Length: 179
Length: 179
Image 1 (cartoon, rainbow over the protein chains, first blue to last red):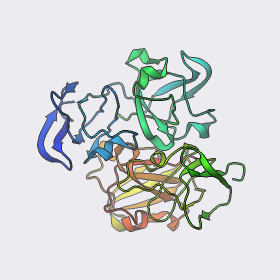
Image 2 (image 1 turned 90 degrees about the vertical axis):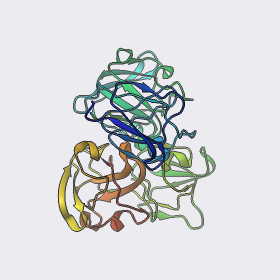
Image 3 (image 1 turned 180 degrees about the horizontal axis):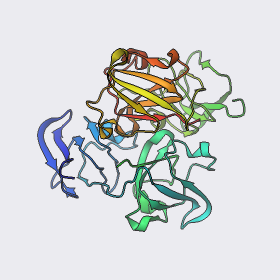
Image 4 (image 1 turned 90 degrees about the horizontal axis):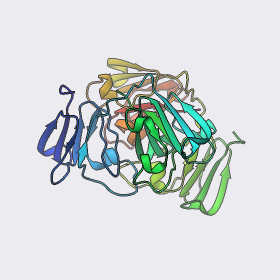
């Protein structure tokens, strides 16, 4: 993706020193960056995760959404390579380890409750193809977690495997990652 | 939609006095509510708008997203009646009054820049069918604005007509409202 790099700045609103990266994976040595202009691909890092589609993110509020704790510095990022916006498929299960009631998605879903999914939690996920972002609240708000078909063999058996920083398995909306 | 009301509470986390409404339109007389449990339909009010799909919103962060100013009380809400998740169509124009370059959407778009839409602003919208939420930042983050086919005859000629509280016409992601 060298033609579509991620470009980051030291200071908000595209101020300060400019850094451009086109490598697959990068960790900043000392401190993160506070402004991100993403060329193509997406971002994820240990702890709290943020999926970034191409566009301009002038300040931390732009990428953090309504998360419960303030993160104004990103410390690592990488592209998501398995996104297949048109052919994504995801299985979700009521309980951990692929047990209990099962649901299937192949399109964006801004509200799992509106689909009839009982409760507001998901126990486990099986990603058949593509990459997905699941969010704590309806309308893609709140904490978000990345699910990839080429990670864990697409198997997310327990909330710990997708949301190490989450307090609960609460998931109320899910969407495909766009390539 | 009397079978799928909106239920609101005076205090966060579903505490305090409980109120249930199934009317098409409602304005709270003195003060808003700080917890919302939406049965079916959606919410919008003068000034800052929040589109709520069915689900649980235990606190203001859950519905407000990463908006620039803190709103912890809702003062009015109403259902969105024209949502057609499967058959939505939206035209967007580079300049106001349906001028300049034109784009067309019939599916969710988490990143207009990734589609090749130049710049980060939209000049005007024409809603052919359904209801849409456009957002300031990619991934449905930041300020959000509701566009409806049965309001303004679906014509949004200028940023003032969809985002009275917005500083700019910046729109980087757009999605259909789910019925």
